[in-house]
Amino acid sequence: MAEMVIPSLLETIYMVAVSTVFSILLGFPLGILLVITEEGNIWEKPLFNKVLGGIINVLRSIPFIILMIIVFPISKLIVGKTIGTTATIVPLSIAAAPFVARVMESSLKETPKGVIESSLAMGATVPQIVLKVLIPESLPSIVSGVTLTIINLIGYSAMAGAIGGGGLGNLAIRFGLYSRKTDIMVVSIIVIIILVQGIQFLGNRISKLVNKK
Image (tube, rainbow, N blue to C red; front, top):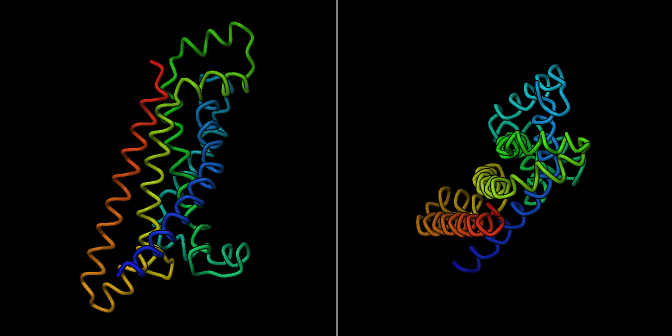
């Protein structure tokens, strides 16, 4: 059984790790824009903020399985195929990006208004406030948000297994459910649980380490 579980685990780690990076690259800037463009903030753009927020909400409302099918053409264009471990990274990244945007928005909003106002009074520019005030002040919360994103992506990757996405989800469904091998399904679920618990533990530890308060 190990010769089936270990490769599937490595596939899941690969999918989740790469899609985490891409989803943060896409979602983090969106989260920053949601914060700084809201009414009364440092780069006030109410109309832009509402449109961006609406788009993000729409993307978050689409179930992952449906989104994965919708972006098949994009996966085909980028990686040359629509199923498999590498192809699944595309829909995983797109699905997680709006989630990251909202999580980062919530984290950045924890920065005390007084700190931002003091920076403005000292002549700091918008990029300087973002890089030197908003992000450092909310770093523990950002780490927790990244941890939550990774766990969310593990769940998405397991669902992707239903349509040939690879990883532990594919192992549990294809060899466990369809072949009626209960032991394989149980082991796959246990490995996923251990993986989630390990990531949550590591995320909590890092969050405490970067917490300067």
